[in-house]
Image 1 (spheres, helix red, strand yellow):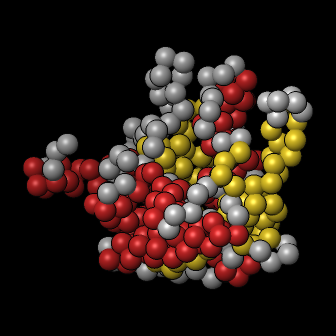
Image 2: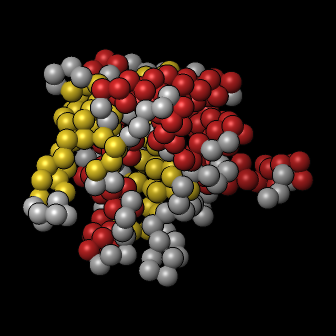
Length: 298
């Protein structure tokens, strides 16, 4: 990749000028960016991401960051000798585990990202969905077929939830006032317990409530791939559902795309799945003609 030092001043000015119509398109709009635990990667990658978020805010865009932290949670559980049980591919979050999840997500990961954004010149505010009753959730219910009896049975995943209500009171006090919300995907159940929410799902619910112009899901894959493993740059909801039905979209990409469809149904104008490990992925998507990843729209 060509370094900034090797680009002439004239080319730098041209690049900035070509970004103008894109900046105008998103002027004063809200962009929700989900930054995955896997996408965080090394410190220099996270700091580059933070710098890009500050740039968005400086160009009159209102960024809202939702972060994950799966790898960091797994590392801490291992360090503390807490064994995790899994059912149907999902971690069962018991009382001991949810304490660690909250400590890692709302503590170390959240505040590290807040620190990077503030270091880059922004004014980040670290919160979770529990603050101000921002996100209420109900316990996730899943079923699996018992391999011995072949009978479908319910699984208790513990303190894991699905968002069902987003209160924007607190976010509306921050957005548009040069403050950058950084949200950990924790919610409160209706009986007051802490619930861990999938970060993609959390971001989709927040973006839908905000009627965001864009929801960007930064992950560890380039986007949605076709059967020959080539990137699909753009999909309608109808096309996405067809690709799920015929098996082109499979595995962990299915819940991501379902989150995209949900967000669009809630009023988000477009959702993009992009590779968060790519330097300046957010700027490439928003400020260039080329874009990156897969745009899903109605």
